[in-house]
Length: 144
Picture 1 (spheres, rainbow, N blue to C red):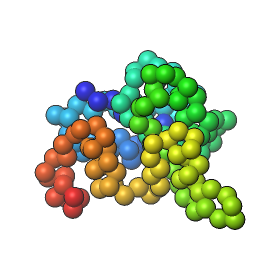
Picture 2: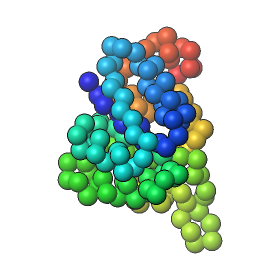
Picture 3: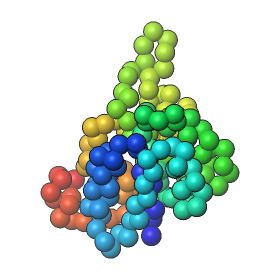
Picture 4: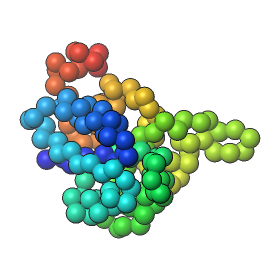
């Protein structure tokens, strides 16, 4: 049973991602874990060993996804775990400054997904990453 950890300080954002993951259906057996801060996520990651982490980059508390992903990548067993930045941060590179996507990838994220998310694309990426099947009725409904 694949485990997905959603890390976001806003409950409404976690709800959107949880709802999306439910589209795989009960047969997929996706276990959804949640953390409302980066600090809390590190303990959950150590204890639950998620197969995929979806993390907001800019949270209201003292921690940011950029700093947290750097910490996670220092833990040997999580160096290769897919960690996706799911963020409203979408500034392009300019005046010698790197883009938000480049910054996320350099910090250790494996993907940079901008909000609002394209649900069909996100569902496909998750399915590919976790080896899950998207039910035909969902494919038809979402035009996948």
